[in-house]
Image (cartoon, rainbow, N blue to C red; front, side, top):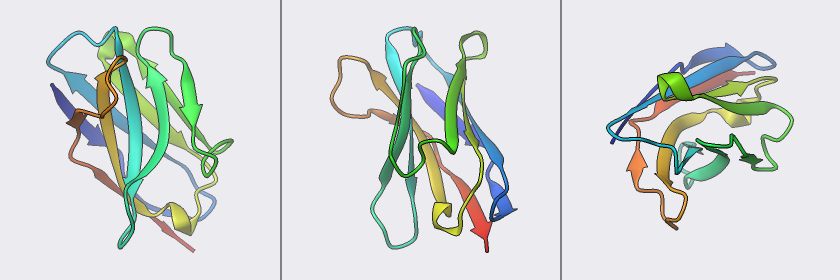
Length: 118
């Protein structure tokens, strides 16, 4: 399995960015995709998940109402639309995937840097 994250960049507070994560290497119908982020000097933080088959989503409180996860099954790509960005959203964002039955996230992308200026 390979995950390729893209779309990071520099944006002003209040702005928007859309991250993409292209997945390849297997059929993902029974998998879950997630986004995490890691700010400098901090631990990796969970953001959101989506199931590949039903599109069920779950969000951390810190991003609820501002971030939206979606997927395009035909393209094996998951998106993270980030609106009303804040300086505290500055981090490296990672996409990850695992079987819906697994407890641990097994596959990780390389990360994409999002910088929000005040």
